[in-house]
Image 1 (tube, rainbow, N blue to C red):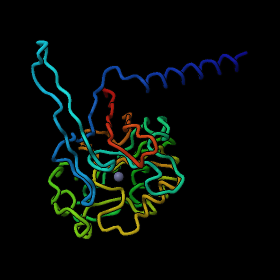
Image 2 (spheres, rainbow, N blue to C red):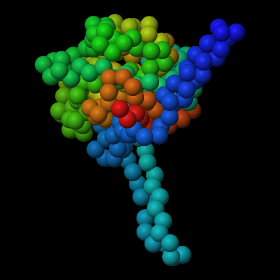
Image 3 (cartoon, rainbow, N blue to C red):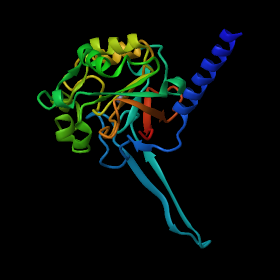
Amino acid sequence: MILASFGVAVLSAVLAMSAAAQSFAGGKWIDLTHPFDSDTIYWPTAKTFEKQTVFEGRTPGGYFYSAYNFCSAEHGGTHMDAPVHFAEGALPADRVPVSQLIGPGVVIDVADRVATDVDYLVGPADIEQHEKAHGRIPRGAIVLLRTGRATLYPDAEKYMGTAERGEQAVAKLHFPGLSKEGAETLVARGIGAVGIDTPSIDHGPSKDFAAHVALMTHNIPALENIADMSELPPRGSTIIALPMKIKGGSGGPLRIVAHVPSP
Ligand SMILES: [Zn+2]
C-alpha cells in the first residue's frame, strides 16, 4: 500500500515535470531562420531564390491584394537535408517523422576553435567535452553545432570562402563542419536531427561528404544554414524545425525556432 502510493506520487511528479517541460508559457522564442530573398546563400551550383510579383496593390474592388511566385533549389538558405539526400532508400522530406524535428535542444559551441581554423571539424572529443559539462545528450535531441559563422551570413565570401558561382567555385569553399566520427557519435546517442550554422554539415573542403553519409544512412536529417544561436543555452531549450513537406524531396526550406524557458 505504502509502495503503491509512493509509485503514484512518483508518477504524478514525473507527469508534472514533463508537462512543465512542454509548456511554452513564459520564456522566449528565438527564430533560428535566415529570411529567403535575393541574398539567400545557395551552394555555388544550385539555383538561387527568385520571387516574382503576381499582383501587388489596390484592386478595382477597392481592397489591397498581394501575391507572389517563388522558385528555389531545395538546398539553400536555412533548410533541411532529408536522409535520402545522401542515402539511397532513406527517408525523403515528407516522411521524416515530426517527432525527430521537435525535441530538446543541445547546443555544442565550438566558435573558439573555429576562430583559429575555418575548416574545423567537430569531433567526438567536442561532443564528449560538452557531455562532461552538461550531461549526456538525450535520445531524440536536436543537436545544434554553433560555429559562430551565422553572423557572417549572407556575405558569401566571408561565410563560405567564395561568392563565385558554378562548379569551379566548389574547390574554394571553406567553412567548418562535423567529422565522420563526430556524426557516428551522434548517431550512437540516438539523436533526432543535427544542425549547423554553415552551408553544409560536412566542412567546406569535403570531397566524400562522410558526415552526411554517416547520418543519413541512419535516417538522421541535417539542418543547415541555421541563424545565430548565441542566445541559446547549451541545454534546456526546445527546438521546433519544420521544413516544407515536399513529397519525395531530398530536403527543403526550413523554419526553425527555439523556445527557451525563463530561468
Ligand atoms: Zn542541404
